[in-house]
Image 1 (spheres, rainbow, N blue to C red):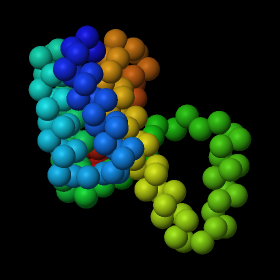
Image 2 (cartoon, helix red, strand yellow; image 1 turned 180 degrees about the horizontal axis):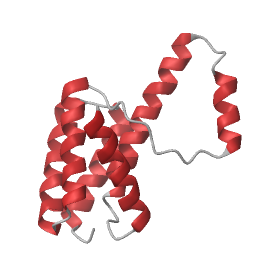
Image 3 (cartoon, rainbow, N blue to C red; image 1 turned 30 degrees about the vertical axis):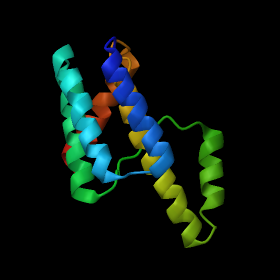
Length: 131
C-alpha cells in the first residue's frame, strides 16, 4: 500500500497489539480507519476482510482465527510437546496465537500486490464468514 497514512495506521495497530494485546476500545476504531484507506484503493477482498475482522472482534472480544496452515514439521512437533503442559500455559499460548494471527491479517494489507497475501486474505475471508 502506497498510502503513508494507511501504513501509519497499520504500524500503530501492530504496535498497540504488541503493547496491550487485543484492546477493543482502540483496535476496532483503528481497523475501521484502515478500512477507509483500503476502500480508496478499491480492493474489495481486503475491505471485506477488515470489516469481518472488526465485526468478529466486536462479537468475541478476541480474534479466534488461526494463521493459515503453513506449519513446518518441526513446529508441529514442538506444538505436540507443549500439549502436556498445564492449562494456564496453554491459555497463554492461545492468546499469543490470536494476537499473532491478527497481526498477520493486518500486515497482509501492507502489500496487496503480493499474490500470497491475496491468497491468505481469501483464507481469512472464508474462515471469518463461516464463524
